[in-house]
Image (cartoon, rainbow, N blue to C red; front, side, top):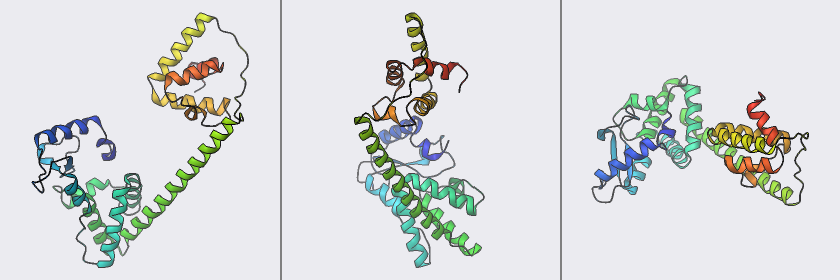
Amino acid sequence: MKYSNYIESDGWLDKSADYLIRHQICELCHKHKATHAHHTRYDHIGEETDDDIMGLCERCHIHIHLMPPVIDDKVQLKKAINLMNRLNDQPVVKTIVLNKVADKYYNGAYMLELASARCENTAFFLQNLMEIFYEDGKEKNEDIIEFALQTAIKTKIDATKIKMEKERAKELLKKRNKNGELKRVEPKKRIWSKDTMVENSRKVYRSLSNDKNLLKKAKSYMNTNYYHGEVFFNLIGCKDANSFTQKIKNDGLLMELYDYLFGGNQ
């Protein structure tokens, strides 16, 4: 499991909560209440013991992440700090940037393993990477930190553009829906008995409620084929299996959805 996914998992949330119950005072300043569980090493991810975790107050946790790396070149150090700030502020950007650095300079190596190779028992993940990038850059005659920084800047710009485009599209979609411009495609008329309709409606609902990925695919299929490819269901709040199935049923499209799910059209 990726680290970014693991720290959001129930396993880590339960483990960190238990640790903070047993270690209520910050283990760095020994003054304030510990509110953050911080990894001190990376080689036991998912199987941590108390030796792999520190309980920190918010101030000390922020301080640890913002501590500068040990780089003797002032220009490189300034860029490294700039890069670290950007990566700490944008976790999604951090993942993209580190993956691109790994692909370009380290044959796709896992960044946690790269940082651990420098010092496995440490709380300074990004600082380790900055020092590695600097030292390897000198050896390769490449500015790895500059590459990572420019990648972070471009990724943030691209993400902002995409977000703005999605917001504009959403507003346009709302306007079109309000004006009655979104018209669904009429299906071919078929007839089910009342009992069949109830039974198949339940079958559709059970199938979609048990598989979020299938629900996503079904919404995409129906959008593309019967709602002109517009993100229609999310717009009107049909996000779960129940509301989506009911909307399709009310629009007289349950047979088409049933065929997609169980008729071999996937």
